[in-house]
Length: 100
Image (cartoon, rainbow, N blue to C red; front, side, top):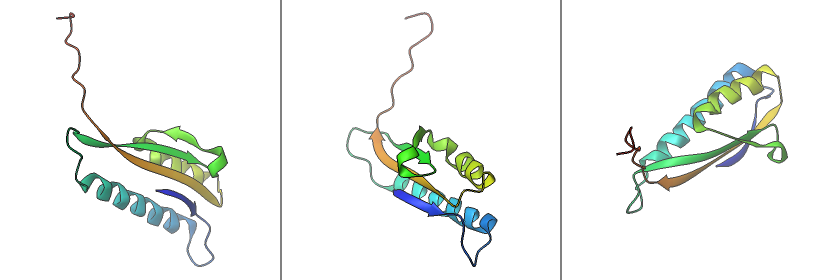
């Protein structure tokens, strides 16, 4: 998903528009996680970027998406850019303490 979301709408209040955007993003993440994994992979990971425009985007963790949207709404920007790219990953074992 690479999309520019508009917060300002003539018919919808910005707070309701932000809620609708968040719901759409949660729905997209849930749908992507339900997809079948390629063989040899354990889970879906997401590369996320957020910014006021596509040129100003910065990489963020997927857990920071909602917080970034709230910050953009607090700054009263008209729109923001969000990029979420799903990729299959394999879990790595944690090293045991003591180097055993």
